[in-house]
Length: 160
Image 1 (tube, rainbow, N blue to C red):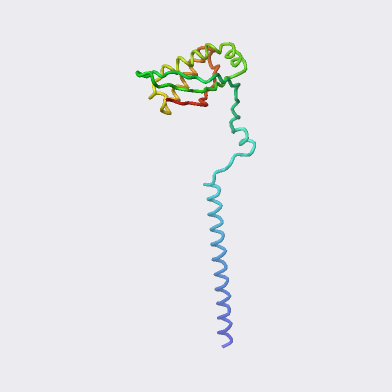
Image 2 (spheres, rainbow, N blue to C red):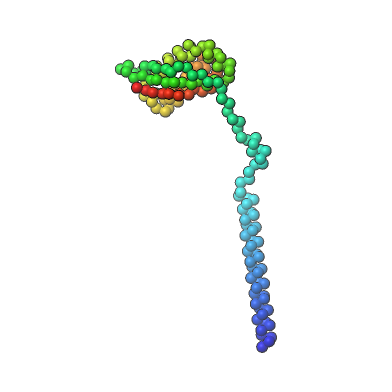
């Protein structure tokens, strides 16, 4: 009987060893799978030095000119519709800004001519306003020199 108890204890010890080996094997297998996933599928971030170099520089802001508000009749057959617009002009550099100040009457005339040539439908849609902005930039660049005007902002835009 003593021999049977020894064999049962050895079998229990052997069963515990077998279970321990299986657990260690599963842990190693999961660790290996996790490591493989990390190295194969995880996105690597660039080193901090490279990340700083890849960021685009902050855009420079040029000098601004805000002429008096414009009130013009729109190209409406009845002649009863008008536009009131405040426009701010952003220039590339100080040289273009100085030239614009010297030629302000010509700039005002060009803006009035472009605004008064538009219909109500053209100025009410977002696409129409964008096209108007681009047309004004082209017209002012013709007047002041290529790439003098960086952007035009409508700070007030009322159609009645």
